[in-house]
Image (cartoon, rainbow over all chains, first blue to last red; front, side, top):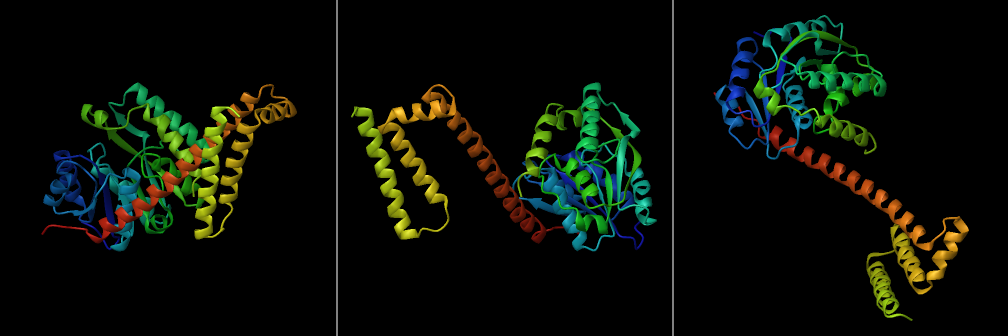
Length: 227
Length: 111
């Protein structure tokens, strides 16, 4: 269980249904501070989360994963979190890898620890998806001048210091690029940790289509011009 | 004067009058009213004297008056699109703040 180093796990969820219960049960084995942000789901995602005894915040309308993450981060900060871990609801991340992500935060070596499936393992990752993710890495290196090996990984850990400074404005999927952009802009110390991502037929159907990358890219670029 | 000119010019005159009446009650603050009245007057001039647009085209080396109009419309289209896009993003961010406030105020945990 948690030490005085207060770790909060933020799980954004949209129409995850029963699948969320499995993810939450796994998380509960090791962590007690968990907040699910039900992003306007049309199914009973919120009820499944409540049944697992975790904190549940509900967006009355669907705002997007970026917005849900920011809501969860705000809540965790209110509760006095020392570190915040973002974790996908669909069970593609491994709970056992969270402690590795927290280590650089505990020792004070980094403000942000990013999970990387390309340093670790990506099981069942289709070739087309790999190509799009690699293009994302290249784009991020050019646009945000930040050298990372994986740009759209939902598993990451933020120190309180970092979470208080990063502010997500991109409601939808462009938030992953936005976090990296802000890390560079705010001169936060970051490092990457190898993680394993398990793709299943289900996560691939629900997840982003490769074509969405184009729309994410345009959202990110156009979003820069609006203040 | 052609029937089209009569209809178009009376509509434009009505728009200018409506704009002026609105400004008299709301006050002449900001500069956007000048732009709007300017657009109506320019449109009226182009309808009343079509050769003006042709002269402008010759001056700019574009060729035909209709091409000047086409270029202006293209610029206006992109300008308006971006303006509306920006407005939508701002509204979306405001809405998100409201949704977030609601979610934070109504946090629940069972047991």
